[in-house]
Image (cartoon, rainbow, N blue to C red; front, side, top):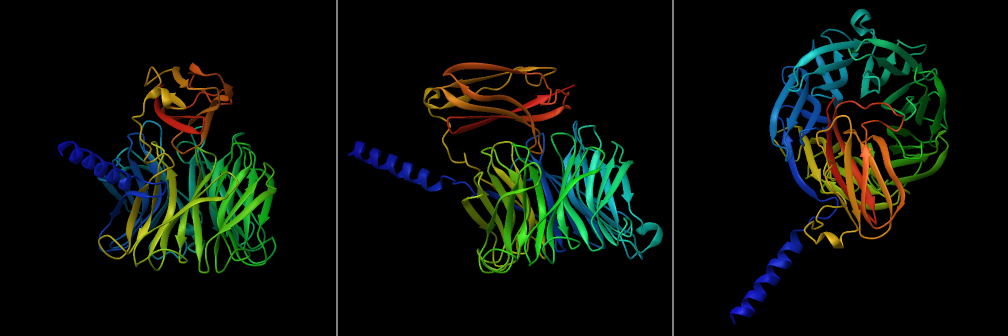
Length: 494
């Protein structure tokens, strides 16, 4: 009897374990931040200590930039409000090597009609080190200049993207600004025609040029069209492309793909099933369309950001009114490399919930920020959700010899100038080993191709594929072999 009861108990525990196992896309935890005034998260990034940093805005007596630093489970370590002269908003944040952050957004002084692009560098606790403004509103009081994205460039400076009214040759132009490490402008370039043109995202490409995406009313098939601009390292245009139909088509985010092409997300009324639909465009290195996909239902479905995932598919964040609990729900779509849907998830309650930004985490999951009225302290609150990735719920205590591959921790770690990375293969496999920085950009390919079964060692000398020394910081080594992916964090100190 005792043995029978023991077997039954074990079976119950096993069933319970299976029942609580997480699937890709399941929320691992959810956090909200803010008080009774409106608060919003625009961008989130994983940080070198394993936690996260969120940038957005909070509204008290005025609208201020809101920075939130959390630990690995979303518990607050510190918050900081950056108060400018009037109304301020953060759209993008990146961690800097050695600690500290760079933030891009907008600032508007009291009594001034327009606003300026706002660039801020902070220390590791979010305290301001310096600020820079770009635009004419402070002097003239009429121009509107919006900064939507900042990225640290390979020379230690920054590239900023947005749009300007009355700064460029026409009324509203897509605007790229290249700065040095102190935020001082090295060059600025305007793109577009006689109507409205703007950028939401800019990224430095593997050859040190730049790719920016937004939308244009100056050219294309009609109404708004997705607008993709490719420049060289000095911002001179190499080519421009538009995508869309006779409806309204917006580009919100672009990433370079492993083959040198580009993946773009946005939303469209030209194609799809009704209202706005999420729009995904895959191009070659010259911006020519390879394929397009739409996602959504009969109501409005909008995407704001995407990332290229470890399996070379895509994770897309946004909002949906076609699916979910009611109103707007935060929305994630995971696709394969061809844009075919692997899974979708909605997050939220009966209020308004949006997912403005999604990023890959160091442990192979996803982190998404946005805003919510379904939960929190009242009005809109910052929403932060940790979502399971493709490896979530897979048991990692199986005997080592049954795994397709095993990636060991590099040694030494931290390291300077080089480190040894060891891995084992159960059988001959097509192996990919790549080094990524915390923004998800591939820095170095160490292994690509068939490798025999057994033990292998690779040395990384802290240089990129171009042979340049990379900056101090945390990097991620990803091993993909036999359909199995493993990652390890590595710390480079110079």
